[in-house]
Length: 276
Image (cartoon, rainbow, N blue to C red):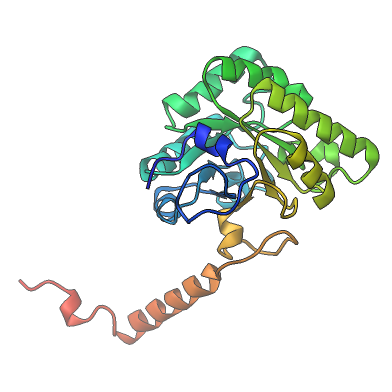
């Protein structure tokens, strides 16, 4: 399968479905998060287009309450693991809280680390028009950027929690304006998180870069899910998450069988040992 690149993602804007693993013009974009080598390898071999090393690692892997404590060094560590495994997909590194808000110099340095040290091909930033200058600067230095608007987890305190965004006219107009601004700034794609389906459709049909939805309905140019949600490894459920497997139950069953075999003396068997 051919390597997925930034231009190929741009070409998949509002297309028709294509064969799995064929990164040609048109066709919905598939995206999944990954945080380590084994799962990244599985995801890549499944033909997923974009593999996002999300700052969600702080929640789903480290057990933190939110993403705010995730550091640049942690993100580089996980991005390097993922990049080593990926041969085809486009690896995108998620810039964590305070890695791009403090200064332009820090923004460029930290984004560059994702490419130079982490092996990513692009970075993702949360925020609307307020981060447009960051996106413009990064693209001027040949660092591709995915934008992210709607429910932005790094802004949960301002938003008062994980709440749907864009339900009133003022918010909806602002999000549409943000999308246009971020496109003009040079973003090659934009994540729309937890916004009404009608608004997501309007944004998708207004801008000329792909939209990737999560809790934003079926009319986006692509969809992304957190790996642990998709595989049933995360506790609880959210309306927009479809669980495609129940890895928690599978793992528990395997561990119970192992425990039973150890306690009964069935493991290890003679053929699983070494002779003198």
